[in-house]
Image (cartoon, rainbow, N blue to C red; front, side):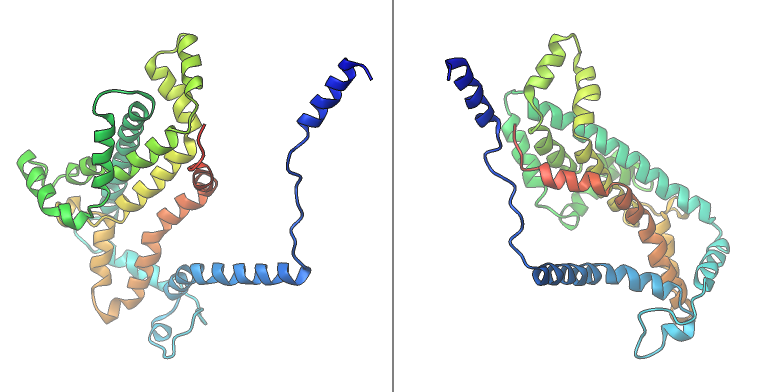
Length: 300
């Protein structure tokens, strides 16, 4: 065999996968047991949602039945209709509460995404004095809960004159350290050579950021949106907002829920209304979140 032929054979052998795909070493019984176990775990995790929806569909006599039943025997939408009737009697309309919540959630999430992404890009792909120290400050900030920072936040927002305004909720959401940390860790896995190639082709910093970096870290910022929407949508904002016309939908619904035994059915409907938006956004972004979890530990 000639040297050329030997070289071709060696290249073919080199190109073969080093590790062959192995078939799972399980019997049919083992597969069945695994699927049964996963089904049980899924049911346990989904049970609170199933029970909440079922309770919202129960008439009052079934809600007070003991022992309680999981599923509604005579499902009805009366709880939801009563909820909207009660909301309609308020001197602030339901649409106003909804607008307040949607505005705070949309603006807060958009600002958080933009600021966290731009800051993470600079910190992940550029070296400058104090970069590591700044990131350590962000990491330490994640250790403090909202209860620990509530008083300093209130004092600062009061000095700025933002108490009883939307900005008292929106501006602090911009600086959430969780989103910054998530975007920075994910951007570190983005190949630096890709950014350098774009700059060689004449792309400026904004073009690199918006046209190359952000599309390649879509799973990360979709996950950030999920966390931000969930936090802002469920924020009662009662600590900073006092005017009824600026209060959020969650606050108004929980006030109805606290109306006593007569509003037990409406309280069950409130739970479903509050959790619809976070669950819907999670369902539409599920694949992106799973991709974030799968690739968050990979490096170039």
